Image (cartoon, rainbow, N blue to C red):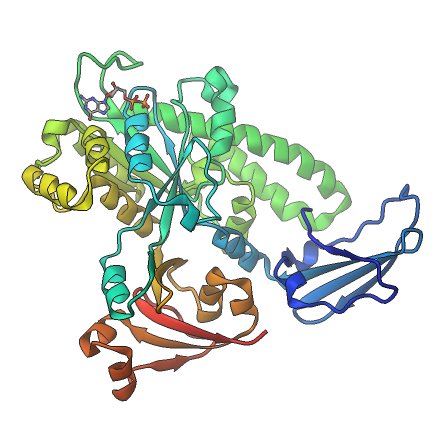
Length: 453
Ligand code: GDP
């Protein structure tokens, strides 16, 4: 376990303070085991204090005269998964596709349009990660109303992996290593070639979107199968000693059968508990899919889809997946332009919105995400949460202290705020609501959280 603690050489254990709590780790109660290794030269004295919300483990190493205090927050396994996803940007999209379908072109568009990385310290800025801002015109309006010094949109992270060829899951062309890179993604963006161009070689010799999709998905399935088989070996051993693991074992066997039949994990009917367990394995074919039909640049402005793209759209609809048609080449050009030039270019092409923006909106829909807003002199900002998130957990996306010490939220809908013209008017009209722990956040809520830690 990756834990954090604090060493202190006082004779009495120091009182826990908020500095320590800021580095608090979340653990599901059932999985916390404190292990003192038998060959530790000096057995530390350990005391464990348990409250409804926290576990405080205090260890005293008498030889070194140091205290080590560890704080753990107890939460349900379900909340743990939510919390893990809260860390960093919510929307992490992993890009896959065969070679030469336009992934790098799309990825270059993403990095060129990229967000100022310093605004988003949690984003992993690596060569294969592109971060873009979620377009939200409401922020600009809030920024003006509150005279905000800074505007910070929500962001989406894109993970690019090298082209997947047949056999990638078996390590061909380093495929499996690349596949591992997108295991953390919340959804997969599959770029499918839907343009004819004799100058751009197709690895399979011809343009055939459905065959390409099948090739890619088989690689995802094979990679998952390997993962599930490895886990099965482990769980089979453990289940012999621990009967409680029997359901997990059954589930893994069921998943293995489905994968062996060439089907995606996300097609299996699962209970919430089973879903949670499988989430922990980060199986690729379990992730929601967003198909991107990469169409020719001269078709980008057309209202009618070409035949290739239609096939992808129909396939996506059958699977309940999202679909966007874009021209990666045009996107790369748009990304180089400033805002005014971009609007002009889009109008000339007959487009309302850049393809990248449509891609992000589709990602939001696919994952059931919404944004709430905070506004003030310092900053106006959008925060991403899942639909159905309650106020304290939404507060937790800003800071874990906000969630822990949540008192209530002062909320006004964006539309009400705009209709009133100012926060003072909102208050005068009695439209600033005071919401408690059970309040389910709505898209466009403008919020101030009251908390006490
Ligand atoms: P990747 O291997 O999937 O990353 O593919 P690339 O992005 O490197 O694209 C392969 C080739 O296809 C490059 O020469 C691109 O310029 C070209 N390409 C990408 N998108 C389009 C497109 O929409 N139309 C045309 N004609 N060529 C494209």
